[in-house]
Length: 468
Image (cartoon, rainbow, N blue to C red; front, side, top):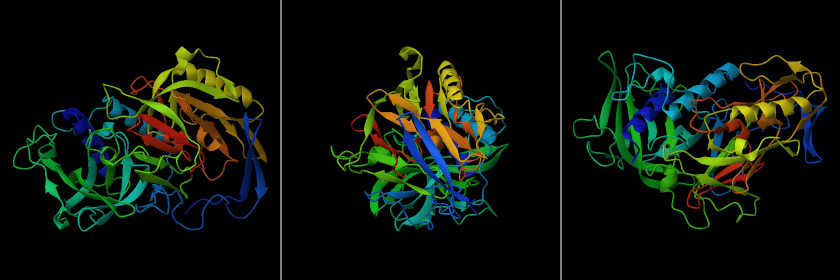
């Protein structure tokens, strides 16, 4: 069972979780040159060849759930939010990594009981959404998903605070399959609870802001597959998501998570996802799907590493980085690091010395391009606005076990306008901060358009390129 401190920290994180597209006037053609560079060509067109004309699901097989970015018009949550700035994204990454490591540099008078963890130290809403069913009969809800929660699926629940929006909240009173978890039971992580149920109240200056209650209920995933007795924490009264979703599904390594409850065979994996790079497109999330190699898809696997201090998280070992087909001139021991695979951290973070060498080499490859001012903490930026051709070196991350993640321009560079690669873009890497829970972090941007396969039973993490 997750520790008392971890559950409270995650409750805080999720309390903040619950507290017109830009068209391009061109198409791009891309190809790989000599295994070392990606080449992009601009050609005139009046419509975007990447963006789908409808919100139809992506064809991924295995009864997958569609994954949408929170800004997508296809998302079940409100999509009238703006793309965050680089500074906002870095701040969100920093808050997320501090939360995962259990540290905070900020203070607040609003904290969770027993831990003192301040609300301002935790990040905002989920970047990616899916639609699932909870309860019996099924209540359709749009939720985020997270591979680093502390053993519970979090939901905004009724009753809501007076005057607060409540249309997307789960109604426990309507579910015949819901069961309360008794206070003091093995499945109740709240040591401070009192009364018959596993409930605590989050207060500020004596005023109850939200009640948090652990219970179990049925979760239904596509295609109409029920998973019974999933542990859920209902956040009532003052809880409301900043991304207008209804909560977040737990896909961590904790024993109560959905990932741990999937029925597996030697031919299947716990779950896999493909994150969309463009908010206008869709990715997918599958549970108990056939192994990609059995389905005829090329996959490379990295060994999953255990971390005694953070057993809920997914770590692989980074053993190499190449650029333009050449390994970085850094000793293998200096590169080697446990790397956290993260869906709610955007950028990819490397050891400071490794990042410095990667940046230097990238700048050499890009020396013919116009340098743009730094954007926030991204210090290697270029202006492609008036060009018709772009060539960028291929960056490849290599992991213990033989897996490799080859990054295209969309995965290695951050664009202010993701629909326009002929604009200003920055290298989307940074030095790993001292407070991060690992020596490297593989962010969601680098993972986008690759199917990331969680073979928990086999102790492996697989990578299948170009899947969404």
